[in-house]
Length: 112
View 1 (cartoon, helix red, strand yellow):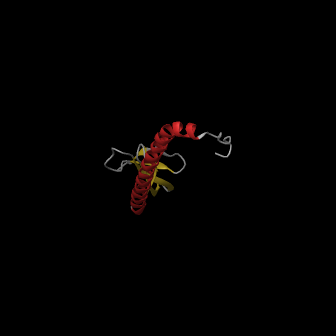
View 2: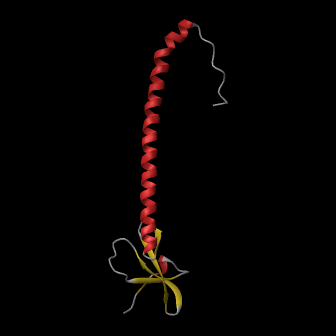
């Protein structure tokens, strides 16, 4: 707000005439500030819940690759090479794997 020009000087009558509009604008800003504080508290709470959920995923040994579409990788060794068992949302069983360098696009079905 440092770039704003200096306010013009008002007579008492001009200030009294301007007071209702300035007061209304101030009250809108106060209400918005209150809502923003509430949203900020909710945002902090949601972030804490997200961090807890991410920690729970990691505690299983999985790595969350993408929230949407829900990609999970479990470090593995398949056919003698570093790889991942992988799952995405909607899959109830581990039925796929991919090498570390191919990612989801290189998924192959688990045989056997």
